[in-house]
Length: 483
Ligand SMILES: Cc1cc2nc3c(=O)[nH]c(=O)nc-3n(C[C@H](O)[C@H](O)[C@H](O)COP(=O)(O)OP(=O)(O)OC[C@H]3O[C@@H](n4cnc5c(N)ncnc54)[C@H](O)[C@@H]3O)c2cc1C
Image 1: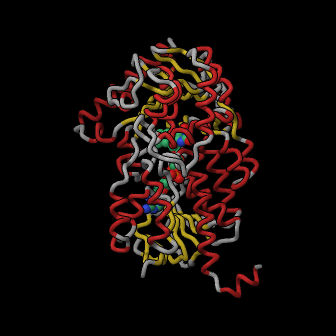
Image 2: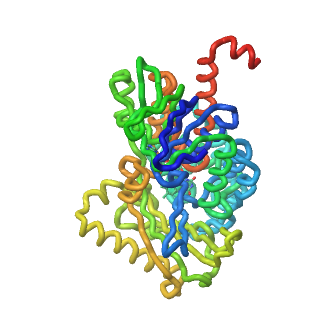
Image 3: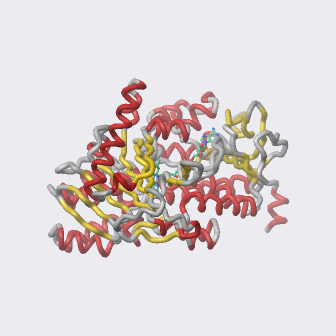
């Protein structure tokens, strides 16, 4: 059922899920399908977390916020844990381009094409390229995590900044990786993409979330939006439920889809945790944030096909720090041609320019400086876009922009982090249940568990842990009856 804004919740649940990002949503659906009583609480007035969209001009124009591309694995996850209609709507992004002073390349972002480009365009030894891909595919979560991305690239392609850019730049955009992050976080995500390329959702994020909401309600999940959870209730190291608008709601387990640091330091009373665990939580580094410029073309206006994802940079060489510069030099354009929403026959083109960004650079500006900087970002983006689409200016209907402060405001994520936490967040997230019985976390952590696929899969992993926890709570005669 869908609770209304002022409804009181008097029932108790097997699981309460705080937050409806793709991690929370997927966990909720799996648990409900497996027969558990689930309550899903979302602070916002719509489900999806970062998987979101917004309208402008009386809903005449729509923008997707985080639908740029994800790996093929999302199809399998959706088929298994959602439904066939959702899985069937996942379609390939075929035309990915790179434009920078080092090279201009068009690719479908598959291993076959990347191998060809590395050998033919970058003139690398075919055996080295094969060894590189083999090394990546044999990496797993339990590997040695001391090797950094920088060391990985130096090991296989020493002194090849152009190759480093070709291999790492798209992943920096996908999850905020830097040269100093553990190579494992790059290896897993890059290999996921390389298996069959980049995918998107036909019909846009609004259609995906509507289909997910219908599926949750069909499977019996109780949903309440506009519900910011104040606290998680814990007694004697056991979770008891949550506090919502001053009222207690009881449950045998709680899954938080909020940021891991927020979950521990703000939603819980820290007295319940060991000193060592709190120290580890304090030391978790947040990942970086991002800026976007949203551009809608006038209805019926078309542009020549310039690719669906276009990675651009004006920098002569590649460094992951440059991608974060407030004086923007690198932009990834996602072009949403009318075909992305065939159901609605909208006949509209939208372009979103994305840039990774540091929260601190934007936070320190005065109100006037902030407005000016945002306007400069918009103006410079249009100037740059003109180099790709010369007559773009006269085709534009409206422009909007978001900064790390916008991300923070709408998502409650500390410092507007777009990709959760660095690698150390994963261990803390996975060990939460060892500190407090029945308390679990699923949300962007450790770089690996972020992005649409990472978040959804982490929701499944944590739903499994909750199921075994609840199973062990049951009186033994009930378990025998089930068996
Ligand atoms: C601009 C941008 C572009 C991106 N592009 C891509 C892309 O192209 N491909 C890709 O794979 N990934 C992309 N990502 C990342 C991806 O969207 C996220 O990693 C993923 O959606 C995060 O899911 P999550 O489960 O961690 O939850 P989140 O999306 O972080 O959602 C958490 C939810 O919890 C709610 N919440 C928090 N606290 C409370 C509380 N106390 N009470 C109630 N509710 C609460 C929030 O309101 C939110 O809805 C992008 C992210 C951004 C910001």
